[in-house]
Amino acid sequence: MFHEFSSSEDIEEPTYLSLQIDHNRHIHLKPDFLQYLNHSCDPNVYVDVQRHEFICLRDIEVNEEITFFYPSTEWAMEQVFSCGCRSANCLGEIKGAMHLDRNLLPRYKFTPHIMEKLHGKVSK
Image 1 (cartoon, one colour):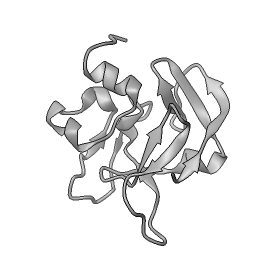
Image 2 (cartoon, one colour):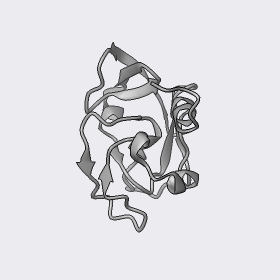
Image 3 (tube, helix red, strand yellow):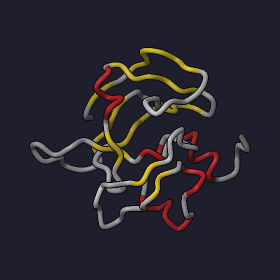
């Protein structure tokens, strides 16, 4: 485990700093520094929204930036952006899980609410 988190605030509409933890629930993270973790198309942590933990996906080197795959938690991004992760697997534009090529899904670990939407079990 990298770090535990909790909600400093539940919000009704997503923001560029919020984290989607269920189909219709978005939070601001506590401790605050977790809100500023960057995206990578080759992430080193995963957000376990059920246990409220950031989990390491692999060994993380000293001074390596901590990153997660934003579409792993976000169905539709509040702010679409051009990724600058420079990973060999870089997807370019990041819009949220609903826009991912389905062939890419095995490459990533997704939260349960995103998996349900990807597999058509939830329509909204």
